Image (cartoon, rainbow, N blue to C red; front, top):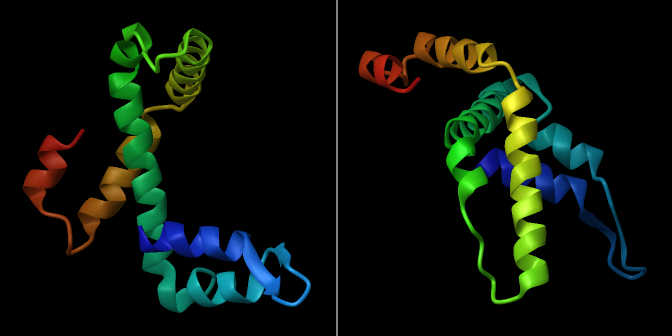
Length: 120
């Protein structure tokens, strides 16, 4: 989560308080995520992205069948359309990405064998 927050902060950073100018802060991004000393942060970000993607792939059929009730029929329809788009896009990603990410994580000391065997 730290990596994601750092990336978002660097992407939309207050560059000049007196003028109110916002923009990308490349120096901050490089400091927090773009140098070899913090490589594990980026790997964690990739792993989290792939983990979420895989969860959406598995839950996709259920999410597509649900009815959404916001109290506003137009919003309900829009929510259903957006969820359907998300499910469709996630289903296009090959499951091999998950297997690769799992193998990479299981090579590290922080991953136990039981996690590898049960998380797919």
